[in-house]
Length: 205
Ligand code: SF4
Image (cartoon, rainbow, N blue to C red; front, side):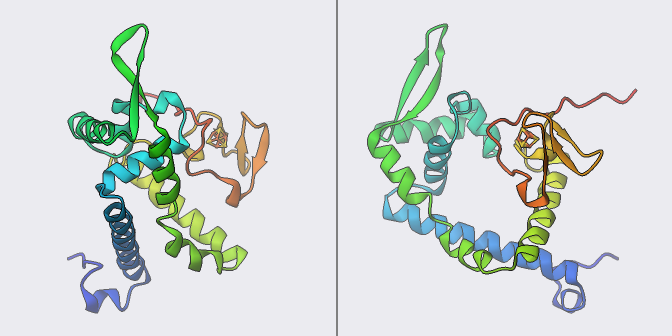
């Protein structure tokens, strides 16, 4: 029978098990750091994540349905989150002229201020990464991209704006971006690209 990576007798003999357990610890650190930032501004973790997302993404992505997919949540949960942020005057809704039910979410001045401050919540995770050698960073990045790609392919996480899922990406001869018309080194592969357009999946007969 397959052993769990959290079964210590198996984990101690398995590099793979130790990596899974380590990723679990890192995800716990993300939760703790985000929670600490949220408390400081009397917000919930998802409210902070939404503010940070709004700060760094273009208007077509600043909509309830896109946010729901981005954070793997229901539209109702995101709508509640947006409603609370609006009541706290951290965001404003900009209704679209052609459809008054649809709106773009804009940060207000105070929302932008909080988003900028909280966007450094993962600093303590970046400190040891900064100290790794160039080759260790490259290996770590490529392993993580592979894990994200698998999680996306199996439907566990939804939207990904990384090269391997982009219609401009070509891997016939290394990594190549047809939009930028240039080769990409392993460390130049993107995890969240503003120009990303999802590749259309071909139907198998
Ligand atoms: S457009 Fe962005 S995501 Fe797409 S291949 Fe080029 S760099 Fe990668």
